[in-house]
Image (tube, rainbow over all chains, first blue to last red; front, side, top):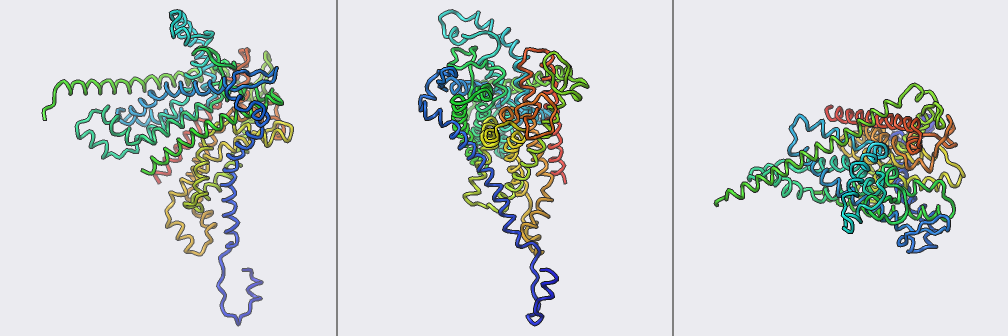
Length: 323
Length: 283
């Protein structure tokens, strides 16, 4: 209430209660906060809508065939995304299979076995490594890992594989260090610190009494972890694993450097392949017309896959937090 | 109840295997990660020189540095962080103070968590569709918006978490003094939560400073020094990506130097953020 208003007010009306300054802004402020929250929602919705609109020409032309055929031919303008889709699923799955036991081992070590002096430094190191940008892992993969991998793993493995056996099929490809397996290993290294850090945090939420009672009954460390603490956090652990999977599925840079970037079905573990993200990263800027739409449609496929995985992960983690 | 010695022996053996496996695997993981950092430091320091900080990105064979990319990265990250802080702090405040248990609040919270770990390349495609394609040109501005979209969910999440940690008595005493609630939030809650919000901001900054994929389709790259954010803009991650894939050793060296710069920045920022949280817990 301004001075002028006070002077103008009728004194006979009695004392007026002064209203706190800025009450009118309340609605305004809440509105801004609400708008910001809605903007986040709109961003996620916008990703979905823009990918659908951008990819529509390809989706309407190829229909379901888009995800079931392998031909990716910009010259004839025919696009089938089965190669990158399968490549994405295989690399992510292999990365998860490799990273999971190691991440679990690291987390168990840090929570149950580690000497107290080392616990903090190692735990911090793992958390810091989880934040290293993926392009660093990609560069290391390209310059350091790939040559060594070709020399010490691929060449001997291909030479040792008996002809006609499953090993020969698995080790098909050009032993130049890049390919499906190499990309999976780099992905595994990349998601390892992240998964270890999340699992460790989860295991630390197990109440001390639960663990101590198990030890009190005479259980060994291994038994405590496997039959008491791990089951206690199982939902959260699955959620953490799926978060790691989500990262592996959507990872671009670490993979693009080393997967070899060839469309079509990978024939073996050492064969070059591609993932959805690496295909988009490699081709989008040079693409136009239908190819660009096909890449957008690929993005939509990736969105749907990762959204499902991440949504499940978050639901499981949330249920764990409620326990 | 008799315990057979054989059973005890097998349980002990099982435990030895478990302990050995965990210790071994931790050792292997730490060694592998140390190797990565080691080669990053060795190769990166080998590529560092005064030129890196004074010259723009070269063509193959000529001397040059990364200054245009460094400046471009800083400009885009700073603008991205400003946008992300505006959205993130307000959205986090809404979730913590206004949303309560409403359905819409739950949906925002849930989808924000999904957005938090959504593939960054898709965010790049989205920003391409809304800011690059309609204006017929890549721009630093589009890059900043893409980075903001990646940082905002992190800030939203931390803001909500730290605000919820503030005691209800703080809100009640503010309101009891006759202050409108928005003023209580601004003058009391934000202030007492400031170091937590700052930590979230730093973590978000660490996350976006190394992001490459979304910048490929938004800021693109620029061979030359450039202050103009409406034009394509050089930035460290994309330069690293392009230079690493060339067959020229001098460009590869610059890529390593850039990677080292980014990794060092990220590590420093993360450590500062962690130190802040620790201090906050102590006080």
